[in-house]
Amino acid sequence: MTDDTPPPSKLTRSKQGWAAEGRFLTGTTGRGRLPPGQHLVRNWPVLDLGRQPDIAPDRWRLLIGGLVERPGVWDMPVYRAQPRTRILSDIHCVTSWSRYDNRWDGVATRDLIAAAAPTTAARFVALESYDGYTTNLPLADFAADQALLADRWDGAPLTRDHGGPVRLVVPHLYFWKSPKWLKRIDFLAEDRPGFWEVNGYHARGDPWREQRYTAD
Image: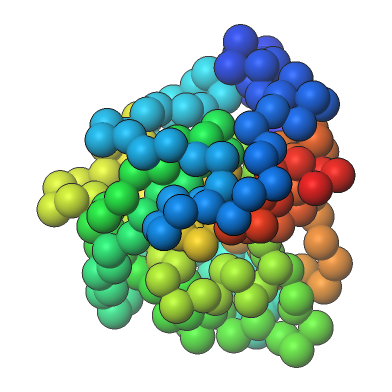
């Protein structure tokens, strides 16, 4: 987190407590498309750290650095010049809700990886958002088939409250691993835990294995 990040919200404090007490853990195997401990919703709940940065598309910049052969800064024209990808995926939030059949449009992380050319030493990515939020991913998860940088959801531009203009979407992990208002991606040799990872949450976050918290 950065120095200008607001104090923790009530939800943030609650989620820290949930990690300490192991809230929502079931030890079951899930049902069909629904991971263990999850319940299905039709709406799309809004969760954040208490701040929703207002980033106009013409002011948005994505910094790409670390262990790459071609570091750079993507503005919106560069982003929109990349190959386009559409996926249909479910959302699984660590707070126990899931939402089926979300249609995303954007740039596949594999295309970003091809453009940046990580070195053989790169094994993780660290992600930073415009609100100061941070999280981490193994490079293999960041490069998964359905992972993408999304700017559209269900046929419309991604709204500010859901992370517009551009957010990461990694559907096979809990959604805290899919940061909103994406600002920076660094390719690293060693893992760098982010905000929730240093506040009791799992380093990877596989919902099918109930990897909610550090001790899972």
